[in-house]
Length: 155
Image (cartoon, rainbow, N blue to C red):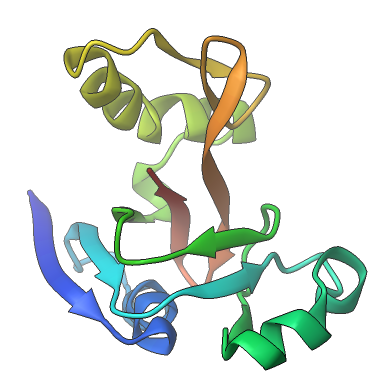
């Protein structure tokens, strides 16, 4: 069974806290979960292995009132706003593929298919890049939090 949560528009911090909390609370009996949400205000989010000051103009972000968050899973810095859908896949590690490439291939197949059904020539490139016409159109990231494997993305 896969649990689906449609959280709607949420504050920027909650858009990150949802999957962090669900992942940290997961055990073998917890259903795998897909969360859909959109931030109610724009913000930037840096990946676990990034220093926000190296990849973002923090002065500009402050002047514009854009929060800058840092998540505890990998991936690059992304801009998120209410015009984007943020999806979060949280799966117990025993039910997830073992290899990183297989994790992304499995859990990014649905967003790629959805984009194709909208008439876009979407495909998964490299390990975790969703491209249309040779251009990256979606941010993705992933990692293990507690007992969970997490893959997140925005379109």
